[in-house]
Image 1 (cartoon, rainbow, N blue to C red):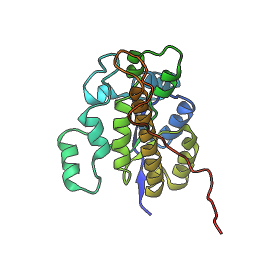
Image 2 (cartoon, helix red, strand yellow; image 1 turned 90 degrees about the vertical axis):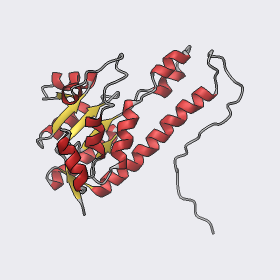
Image 3 (tube, rainbow, N blue to C red; image 1 turned 30 degrees about the vertical axis):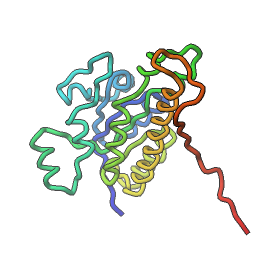
Image 4 (spheres, helix red, strand yellow; image 1 turned 135 degrees about the vertical axis):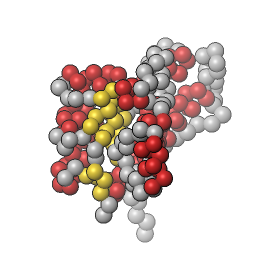
Length: 224
């Protein structure tokens, strides 16, 4: 069974439930923490050593936070195949640090548009760009990168790392990647469903041209 050593993580979360304790557990394995904005501030306040993404990339956060993580030094660190010598040469040539785990959850788009009086402008501002991009990059490279979107997975990840000396199995990464693509599909579906029901002036349509559903299995059915 292939195991990946977790040496560097990137944390950027909207839902900060349990994140400080999770980060402290990761830090106990000697993991370096990269982070952004409010997440970095909260982790530092708890006494953790954190490296700002902007310090690592050499590029500041800008445009009211619209641009934070869309940078080759982030996505190169997520997408590089660790068993491909040419990828590793590119990493070294361009000063890219490999990122072994991302811990990300997204702007609460569905909660925003469910609020009474939510405007189109407010809804669009709550469309997350950097988060889904990093999630998809990490999930695509699941053989080498762990992608964590659900606080409910924190304890299981730490337990596995304790049992393996700071490593995560490819099987776990595959499960987490599958969960991630389910999340991003649901997220994009919520955005398209919302936009499909309105016009640019904010008025409502009676029926959208398309509508996206996602179903969760409740149980297996047995047929005689």
